[in-house]
Image 1 (cartoon, rainbow, N blue to C red):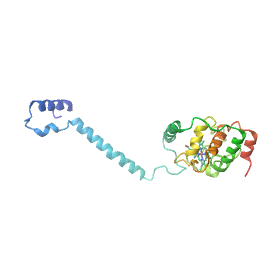
Image 2 (image 1 turned 90 degrees about the vertical axis):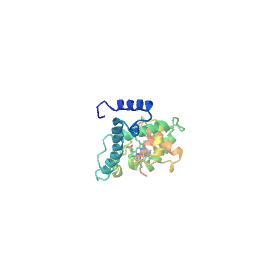
Image 3 (image 1 turned 135 degrees about the horizontal axis):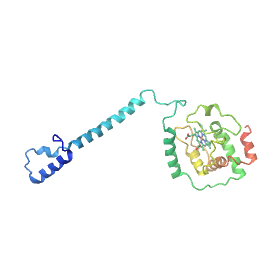
Image 4 (image 1 turned 45 degrees about the vertical axis):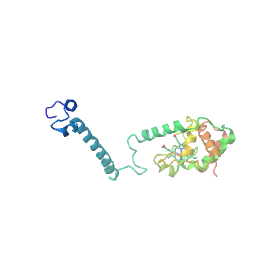
Length: 206
Ligand code: HEC
């Protein structure tokens, strides 16, 4: 605004002008956007161009942490964890079709040794070289601070069935049966109170 009264006043004047005389001398000026609107639009366009440009520069800079040994992004765990929790809350089954009988736990131990131990470890055994080289690190499910005994079996079942994208955690719904997936989920939900036979089966070789 040349007179410094702001876009709003100019807009009002234009509207009044439109009502009073159609034969306004400067016809085109009626369609002129107020200055504040112009700078707003310029800002929007700048952001639309700048954001992808900065993103592209960053991705092609060679400094994005893509190696498993790279430090995590700030808030990486919190952001991905939030998305995962929201999906699981929506989709994880609320009822468990099996009970933690000794047979089901034993079945779970077999499934676990075949499909999970290489990443998630076994009781009384050191982390494997594979687990040590992964990012994010696979939780060591027999160590007290990594156990998932607090999670409902349905939550673990969701993770086993669907996997967790871009973490190395595979989804097993194409390769394990429903029963096997529930058995291993019940095994992990009861990891701190397993019958001795199941504990032995987990540490026994073969
Ligand atoms: C190739 C390695 C690998 C294999 C094999 C694997 N997982 Fe995982 N799993 C991971 C990784 C990595 C994570 C961590 C994902 C993350 O940080 O979000 C994970 C996460 C999990 C979690 C979530 C733990 C938590 O703290 O919330 C559970 C439960 C789980 N896996 C169970 C299993 C079961 C059961 C099997 C076998 C049927 C299995 N995983 C096989 C790599 C693996």
